[in-house]
Image (cartoon, rainbow, N blue to C red; front, top):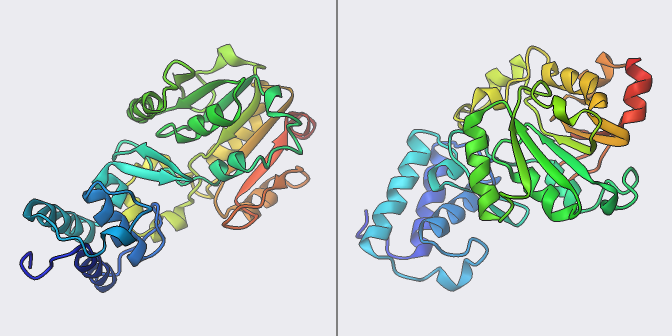
Length: 300
């Protein structure tokens, strides 16, 4: 096979055929077989992932060919998400280290932060003095916070010490290892020293319910279960966040929660709770904002 496949174009074509033939699922940075094939080949060759055209007809070295074939086989036979194979994930122009110790970053909150969509609730980014990334995973959202709220002290917490080890790698990569404070904590249980401190809390907690967990493709089951499963109705962790966040927010603080497609379950469980759903590239029912004042009103 290596003798027949010669150029970058050949290996991309072969990868697309293999991915389609084996009915792979995507969603860990790409959405279809072609984009996945391009990403796999370019990353393996240490080429820019946004620059395909100049390299399409480049001939490959034998060792490059062997590594591409090996990675295609891993992707097809073991259904391992591509970021775990290449140890690299991309999110809105950022490149992050990732491995099986943490979920692959893909949060809509990154988009919301970059697009300044919190302005109706946060008049000026300079007014955010302390911010929390709860359930930080590989630390990606804490880096978005640090990049966009320049005056904020950022705390990133997670129950998993393995995830925090991965987050530390990314914080060092972006030179935020002295800026972002990592905390091991099961939800808010280890954050009592921050009571009443945060002007902004963002969180992308586990929210996949029992039924959806059973239907997830194999690729998603390669990720840590603790990062995905949100209990019977997907709201176990969301409930904890809603009932406890007010104690850690400042008087005019804001909570931002991503919770997949469980909007109806949330509204049924908390009738009368006023939350604002934010527009994202995926739709308007995935991320909501709620103020400390509304949490006080509803849960008092």
